[in-house]
Image (cartoon, rainbow over all chains, first blue to last red; front, side, top):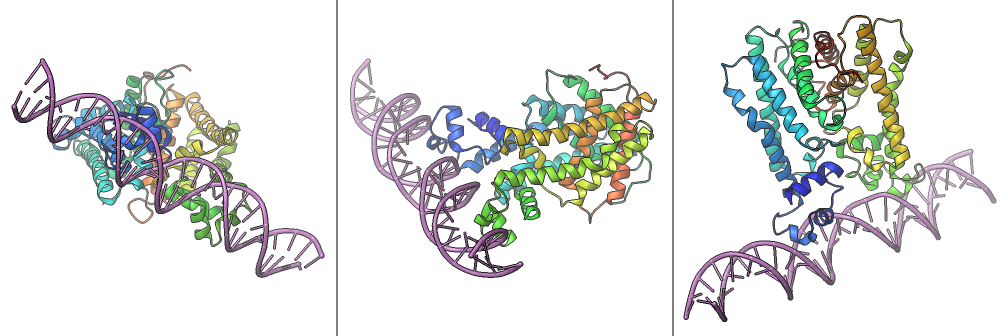
Length: 192
Length: 192
DNA sequence: AATATATTAATGAACGGCCATTAATCTACT
DNA sequence: AGTAGATTAATGGCCGTTCATTAATATATT
């Protein structure tokens, strides 16, 4: 049932998906859904949390890994994030962006914490790249957001049957990011 | 009134913004809105079209400009797109992504045409950079999407009072993109 | 094994709320 | 007087959720 809801939320949006829609798609009446979830919001929360977990889990160790090469870490992070992202079907919207308003403050905070964790990890990886001399001293926040932007939006336009394969996309984004970061100058950096 | 609707749609989403909301915010009753717009969808269409116009208009000439330096063109495009994007308030969602479903097919097509125009322009600029020897032969679609992704998502996280200024962001993205593209190898390219 | 009891899953019916929109009427302006 | 803008009252529709009931399944008891 959660999978059904997840699919519909991504396809149509949270608000445009009714409990009746979920029931019809899953094969039960909407009232039955309340035997499994307390309300609609809880379904959304479960969906978002599960996806965030899938994104964070494989890269979590990077936060404390001060030994592996930062370039390898960057590639690993990009590859993991991208593969999770593209393991789902293409979607016209990014649910992480649009659905947070529909969560109560405490649940929203939990999802935002996941995002913060992601941001923290990617910045650490980049930081290590700087410290190791691969990248110039740059704004970690900007760099992290740029890379994440490129990855997250692949879900909107990437189509597995057309153009580049996932592997090629990993390569492209990794190299683009690596070159992009490597070539930046001190200018534009800002102490935070 | 259009400005009021635009603001609310971006803040809360199209579906979560009721005609009552628009009326209250604008200072009239919802029924009055129908003296100016035939229905809710027409408001959305007007909002999206106006914003797309603002994005496309300043860069439209780039489509037929085979003389200016492609690097300058790239910078100009990034700068224009970014400045339009950040001329609006930060938003938790990208209306272009989420609201298209709420348009009738013919109106949706019109907005998508704008996006296609943007994609065409940015790919042309990159194409020229390739032809002029600045970039290696790469997948134009991927490259275009990457740059556009970085720009469009600034609307979600950029805050004018914190961190980098708009100008610094223009510099950052331009250089990131320029270096990113410049350093790419033939590998990963794919004939389309 | 058969039966009673408990639990879980599923449903029909309905509620109260909100929505976009319309028709009729009113008000302000020229 | 005519018109544009604004409002009131109402409609039909959809929504998330609740409640009482039923059906199916699991567990405990004899």
